[in-house]
Length: 108
Length: 119
Image 1 (spheres, rainbow over the protein chains, first blue to last red):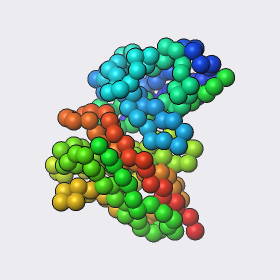
Image 2 (cartoon, helix red, strand yellow):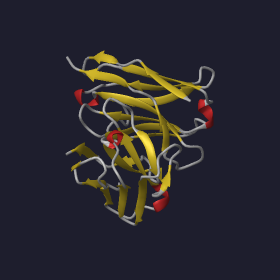
Image 3 (spheres, each protein chain N blue to C red):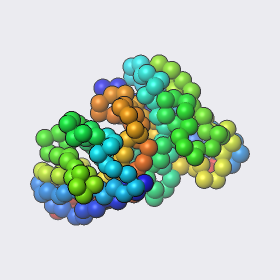
Image 4 (cartoon, rainbow over the protein chains, first blue to last red):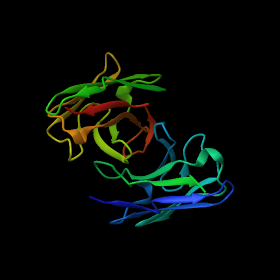
């Protein structure tokens, strides 16, 4: 089973700053099958990015994804107040699918 | 598109519970469907999935042999029968729709139903 490890565990930033979140896989993951989800407090997760870099419907362009092999990155170019949340990466090219443990982006 | 889970509640260790997910705005049998859970204060854990034609099911290692996923096409519902429940099964259980096609991400999540396993 491919293990996804996200870092850092918590990211403390101010609105307007750039956020860079990492997802590292224990073995190579096809870029076709790497997704990112956002979970705001008290809400269900929602799909942000799939296929490493494709934004889901309605997701603003301040969110971008990149990477390949074992290293993937979610970047939020300029944090808005609603972006302070927990972010999960997912490998959906395996059965069962696996998730990273999450990165919390909190207000500094 | 709407997914509404029901059936959560308090159950004793060793007990059983059946969760249901009612889908509206789309035909459930058109998509692969899944259950994902989240223990209090923890991350996301894959529980189970079923293909759009109902021909294949899959389970996470922690629930294999204890949980059964099924669907009722006439009611447009997805079910999860949970047995031999343990305290570590305590979690919010989300019903999740996979994006159209095969090997796709999860593009829609229900709001979840809380299952508490405790004596």
